[in-house]
Length: 99
Image (cartoon, rainbow, N blue to C red; front, side):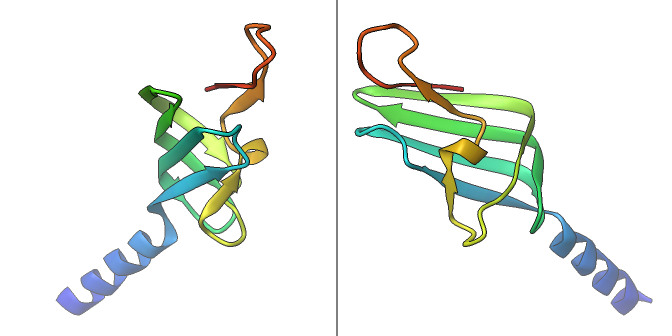
């Protein structure tokens, strides 16, 4: 009985697990990492923590329900598939990163 319970719990934990990604293709000097609670081979969703840093700036954001498709290689997430947006939001001619 204990063996069956252990195998069942192991199978459940393999089906959905926490995962951390580095976001690729950000503007020069910026770095972002995303840790999401629920992640399978085809989708990541649920509570997430986004750590953004660059140019003397460091901030951590929490999302109650992030959702994105994980990268095929499993490590570097293209920003187009992440909850980040890049653009010149303050019209200073420099690329900005928004969550």
